[in-house]
Length: 339
Image (cartoon, rainbow, N blue to C red; front, side, top):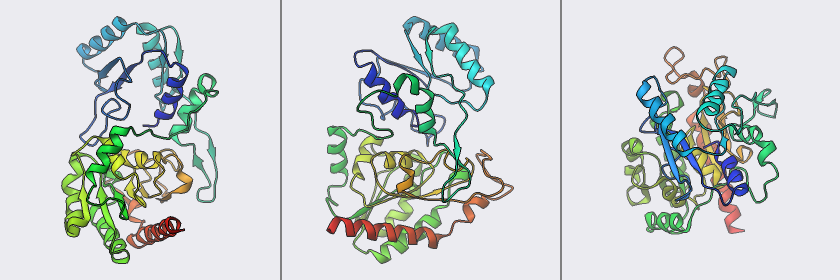
């Protein structure tokens, strides 16, 4: 998802060109693959899917054969690698099998700055990708960094999903997260929502996410009967996103839905693990959201599961502080709508 602002800038520059997408297959049931729904229909003339573990020579040969058959004039690389070796490997692959013209060598050190919350703040990934391609795309007009376009079809479907709510005040939630270490805990989220609803009893709840999260969200939404709607895994991601377009706030953790909600300007309360460095995977417009991130000594571990520290960075974030921040943000949003 971090590549989308740069892709829209690219599309603006090459309006009359056809595009081929080379993307990995979904790594897990929680992953939203790039080709699935996030781009408008017919954006790509061809989609090549590859297994990230290209150890099997058969998979490798099939991908190379398809690329050579399509013979692209230009390769634009949106993937940022952690090492110079990995970036060089990608570059050599595309030079050998795709095109001699390649934009974006995938190794670019992040800019590290400071702000009121973090003495060291890493450049968000979506800005880093834009910088990677800046000399080619920086002058393109009409491109809003990180902003997401919902089609008329998306908006129509989304409104149908929450027809019973209409324009009544509601919030969006997601319990998504690719890795276990990103999960704050369903019980904690349930407690937060209980405190919010106790303060705002007329509030509706709309849950979005993957099929894997349906049963987890159902534990929360079931308590509120017809005041809650669970859309997890039932509809296209963009249509589900359209369903919460008018939400007062979004509640979630480091996940795809977090980035999608931010991309349509929904103020968000986010619980973020310290598996990545502060700022690195924060969403677009992070300044307008409340992000709970505890920079423990082990931050930037990139673990998928945290056994030894028992997700210490997440345990330091309390239900009370998240709920209070959400209540304050909802109150502010309600005041704004009535003015």
